[in-house]
Image 1: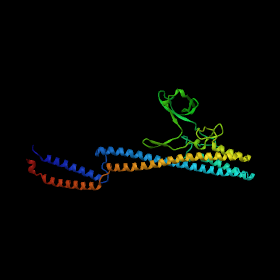
Image 2: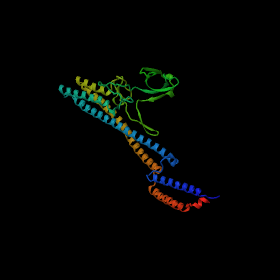
Image 3: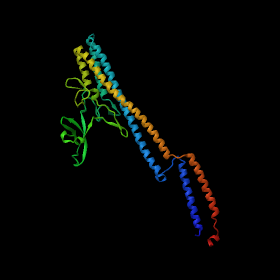
Image 4: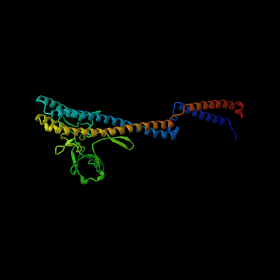
Length: 362
């Protein structure tokens, strides 16, 4: 086969362009990145996308942990304030129960007890970033009104899957209050509806305690809010404190009723009843300390999780760097080598391809 000048020129141009392309790629890699588009390195690009997805998840989990820790810190501060209020109440009641105080002294103690009751109600309505911390999922509402009655329904709930009345054949989940043998829920128009428990399959019912969760890992989540009834309690039929039964709307909070009873005992100068109230105050403080310890345990868990997520973030950054980042010194050496090859190719090509009039006549 006869090798013609156009063939030599074509081959030389192709090789020079290939060399230029390699130089251009190396020039880009000198910025610190190995590739610009997936076609530069399909496998590397795939790994990069996967690692960046994992990185974004870890960063979101980290934000969730920080938010959860802030929420629990606010709750812990509120509990500390309640404990201080109860401690001061204990001191006042203990003083008043000694029978050595005058009417004026007892009146002053009563006024302070009234102020402390107001403080309890104020703490019950504590908010974090505009959300009430003791009202479960109803974070836009207050827990107690000015008289110390629950303004939200914290009674036992469940998530029930039902047929969508607006779209037959479709299923929707509703938050229902358990009332005897029925599930009671509000429809889209705000009207109360009831469903018999015996008409709902067990698989369509999930327990729901009104608390919301933060997802802090692939398979890990944590409930951050405490329902108000576990802290402020309710009064059972025998007049005893109940911190387990969920409060219902309009029901008096136990801690508020305790202060009201103390006020009445002070009016009646009933020292025996005041002595009994000291035991009740100790019980309330014990419950507050129990809830505080639970929050402390969760906070410790959050700290460990935060450290774990930080380690994962560092590891993912290292892996991402291995996939995406170029070795600058190595790239520079290759660029200089490719540049020398390109210049040598130009020089050699110029010497080989020196066409004359005789070349075109042949």
